[in-house]
Image (cartoon, rainbow, N blue to C red; front, side):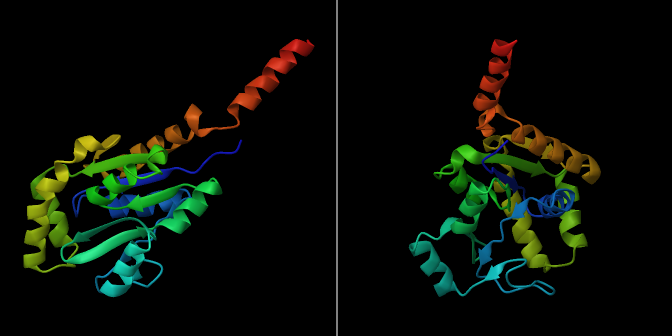
Length: 211
């Protein structure tokens, strides 16, 4: 039966595991469309424009915002991030789900947008603050100063956990992945996400009438 695509938002403080969970979910279900964000920050080693992010100048990004081309946007650590709107709307019409790996600000904007009724939001918590700090240092992508800034910001980010539909504690990555899969499967089966169900049930009733 036909189904309108949903928007799966995955958020967490930096280092709690949302990016890893996003990649695992995409590998599990290749029909998922990943929302590639636009950003004004410089590419990190190995990142490719159009695959990891759409890397844009500050002027290009702000022009897109003024033109209503961003579904959400925010400034984080001095750089802008945002989700282009058109690809998301196209995927929804095709019945494809879109996965967002974004922070609470972006999630809030999408939930408050015209597409809010199609949102399923999941917040990922670390098992402890000490573990969060360890994970940030282990990935060796940022300086001590940047890590300190991310840790300082994590308290505010965690305070938004209650705004989400689901909350996962990422103590065991494999378990968190399985829980995320169950959320997606259950949400796809919701009655209000299956617009052809009334016609199907009428067909069943028609079969009763013919007996």
